[in-house]
Length: 201
Image 1 (cartoon, one colour):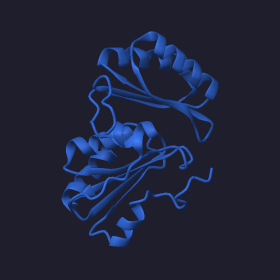
Image 2: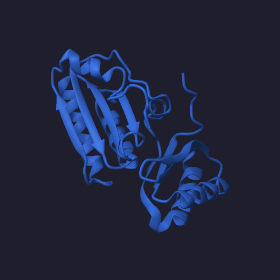
Image 3: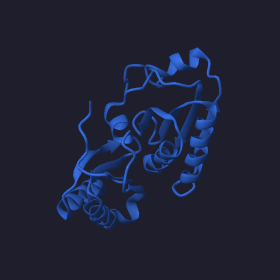
Image 4: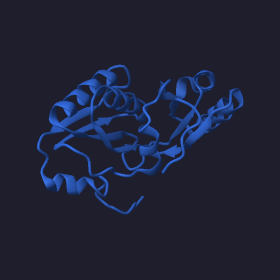
């Protein structure tokens, strides 16, 4: 089981230049006491930084990092009281089965920050499970998430996610609802949604 993060707030920066990303990482660490959940390069020659902690320090560090990132920022998000399933889903990459219901809801966004905003809205507003969350690597810098549950709950989650996406970088987003999903679809998702089940670069 993944360790709990140090506070309720979660922030993600997507920076379009790797050197500037490292400088932003240095600046936000020096600004306030936060926990770095992950930092590194992703496809598209971008640099992602995810960090957590108490609300006020995370806010301060995010402001500082955005100042440094400036014109190289692709997208950012701050979740002051992040839904507790988000970080474990990102950390371990596990597809979570079984879960009750028969309907699959898929979301794709052009940036991971917008995806976190969408996923949180869906999870907090509807009785669904987050069965998969993937950001950037292997997706050309995009992000995907899979909700699972009863049809009306998944429909509600997707609607809430779409509203949240409208507050972020919404170019190229897609959603799909698969009602009474065929077992073959479920089987395809269980090992992960990648075509090659072993990473090939």
